[in-house]
Length: 72
Image (cartoon, rainbow, N blue to C red; front, side, top):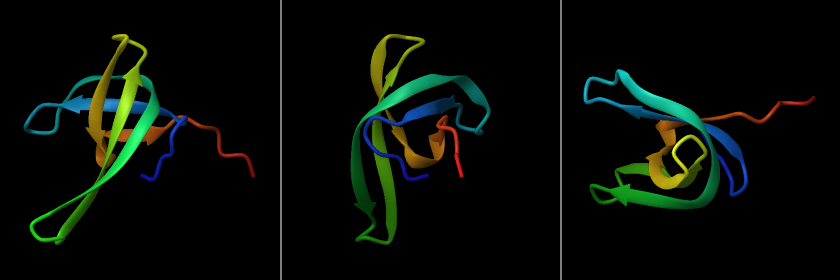
């Protein structure tokens, strides 16, 4: 997912076996590209303000989804 600063998102915390442990709405505060294994893998990290917990946590791109309405 490509999100930008200020987007409303739903975040997911998962256990190691990808079962969802917690989820809720949040707001993207910062986005950062990451590369590892000499650029073989690329991901985006998002700093998300979690409304449910009133804190900021970092999520990888596949653990968030957009809450914005897709108009036309």
